[in-house]
Amino acid sequence: SSDKQLAFCERICTKKSEFALLWTATRPIIAILQSICPRCTALPTLSAHPHNTEHNSRREHAIAAMGARKREKAQEKKANTRKKQADYERRRDAYNAKRRQAGMSVLRGLHRIFLVILAVGLMMRFARFKLENNEKLTRTTSNETLVTIRRDVFGVAVRASLDTCAVGGSFTSKGLTEARSKLKCLWPLMSNRDPNATYFVLRRRTCEAWRLAVFRPVVGQAYAAHSIDIWSGDNVSAALLDEKWLNDKGGQRQAREDLVKSLDAAPFSEGGWKGSAEILQRAAHFRRRDDDSSFLASLAKVSPPENSLVRLRGDSFYRVSDAVVLEQYRVPERSLRRVDHWREETNVC
View 1 (cartoon, rainbow, N blue to C red):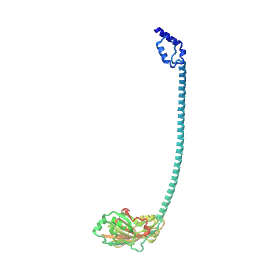
View 2 (view 1 turned 90 degrees about the vertical axis):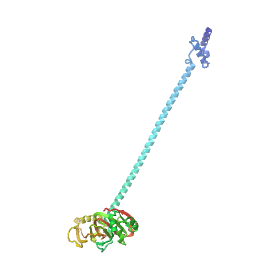
View 3 (view 1 turned 30 degrees about the vertical axis):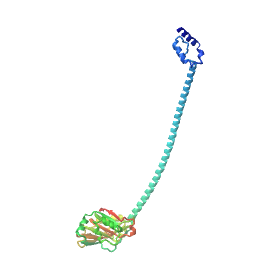
View 4 (view 1 turned 60 degrees about the horizontal axis):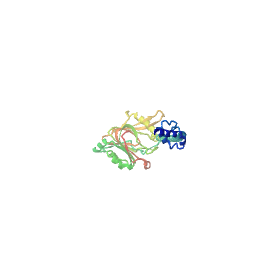
């Protein structure tokens, strides 16, 4: 009956200490008793049992210890990370410092190399300037006439090709074959070439400036042309200076440029000309005011007849507005070793 059940529950509740050793095993039974016996108020709850309290305290202590250990490990990990980062930054700074030092060393080396190259270049440029302005002009002419004219040299077809050809070139005696293939329209001027010539300049020249035909195979060597053949319908002017000027200053570029200025102002319109209607010549005396030097020159004005070829002495200055010009040089073969056998030339000055 219910009274017996309540009495049984009360006995169990009053003798609960006897079940202390079996507390864990009897927890389901105690829970059932608490549910069916409301009057059993003295029965402690599961959480209030001393064994359970001790267990919870140990668990809480273990959890606290575990949390502290985790926090310590996290702090150690953070400390190790900071240490690694500091080591990395220190190594990076050291590496960058070495790179900067190496870069500065390279820059200092490049600066020294640049200074050396600049100094060598300036010295070479100065030496080249000295050579160009103090080289001696080598001439192969002696007693040749200043101006000669050959008449009726070409046929109608050749004259038509000469009028339309615009290609020019310079070549040596070893490049005659290549030059002939590329200068077919100008090649008729080579029909009466100098057999002793080794270097040629064949081109159409459309320039009214004065020119002294000079060839430089290398710096410091200047060779004047042996002869100059001109095929043109325009007037040709020529000036041959005396031997002293050609020997002393013929190789100096600045002296030639100064002389060209004097020739531009030369009295070609004055009287005293002698000769025929085709070739007029006269002597002229030039004097420089800056150094009180003077030199003589033989001037010539040529009015070539139709279909004629004008030959000038190679060491003379000449001027013509539009013409086909052949310059022939007698240069030693040893001086032509570094010269191209063929090179294209323009029709400018």
